[in-house]
Amino acid sequence: MDGKLSKNAVFRGHETCTILVIMYLTYQTVPDGIAIKIHGELSRLDIPVVRRAISDFRGLPKIILDLSELSFLESSFAGALFEIRGSDPELAGRMEIVHPNDTVAETMHIMKLDSIYPVNPKEASI
Image (cartoon, rainbow, N blue to C red; front, side, top):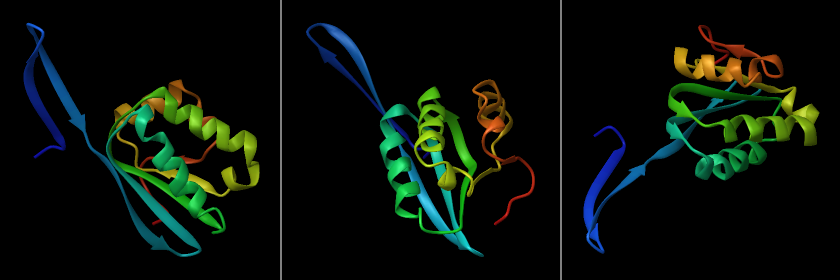
């Protein structure tokens, strides 16, 4: 299964389609920190989960966001990372983004995320 479930239904004479997109996080310890791997499609509804994960590990010297399993992200992700940068620049300075696929890397470039966070598309610190 690719992480998506769909169900067609009829509501007041109109056919509707409900899509459930699953995003989940996995964690791996790395020297001096933690790697947070984001799986699936990241939507605005998932941002509080990612924000909380980053916050939970704020005391560690290094936080790596591994995007190797991320297939899509919305601009709300950029907004959340810009917000972290503004509210806690010291934390933002310890964050690194690794392994975005070409589409995600291009989106991040358009959103200018690569200008405030190190983005390493090929080699990871993990």
